Image (cartoon, rainbow, N blue to C red; front, side, top):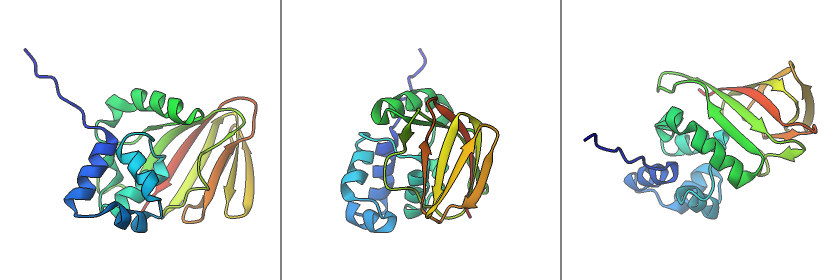
Length: 181
């Protein structure tokens, strides 16, 4: 009889790595700029962090972000459904395989009609490229607002605070590629 492999949740993996490095939640909060409460929610699988937060957590834990997303392809559908249930308007799926030598990461991002992504904005080292597959999206980079429709794209310095907002009456789908040094 084949043995069933038990999958470890993303929050549990983050907690284990943090604890293995003898890092407190407070220290992790100082390394990431995220609140202790939010980090606890992530570790308890109460929230699924967006891609930019995973990059920040990976950097703080000195891990390739892919290490936090083991079993990604098998769990993509479940996570997408869980993200939609928890945030009611945002989902993503990893399109690229991860490895320590790769700096480009591709994602398919969905944002429901007339909605913002949670939080004050995202900020991570590197560059970001967004291509609108369908719908429309507003991308605020620093104080500059960019309105993009289907077929349009934007390339920007992702170390600047940025925020995405679906300004249309239909869900939007984006191809997002991140470059992280």
